[in-house]
Length: 202
Image (cartoon, rainbow, N blue to C red; front, side, top):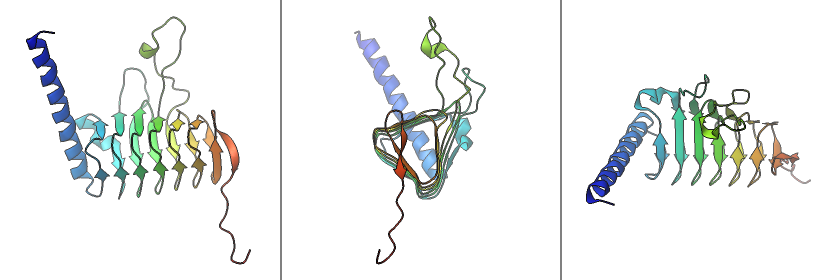
């Protein structure tokens, strides 16, 4: 590789790091109660920051990637990310709010290295998969209040998780989870109801 090429690549990486740092600073200024590690990658157009809604006391741990694409040539669906109050996004989580909306209710937590995906490409035989339009039949992901998503989970487009439910570690969810239930597996299925606190003396 020529010296000129090395310098060009190095400069491009430096510009990318500077742009990401500036975006992180702007987002933090708009959301003063946000606790966000410096390694978090924010990928959202500056002109579209209103499509990012963060509640009070949101904590985002190291090495997360948060993508918000309000408009894409692959779909007519709008991309948006809405996060409630007292949320924990653990290390290495990937939130992809493109081609649909991701909504996370207050008091919820997403375990480390999980992925939340609002839309996916259609699969058409013989066509390049990442050039096909996104599937608009199932879009968006919604978590209710006080939802716990365990580590290494994948929440696929069309997922809806009711209040107070738990998703076991390593699960893949692509459907509706009622409130107050524990689901797990690939694909995820109902395991049991969330137990109630035992009454005193019982």
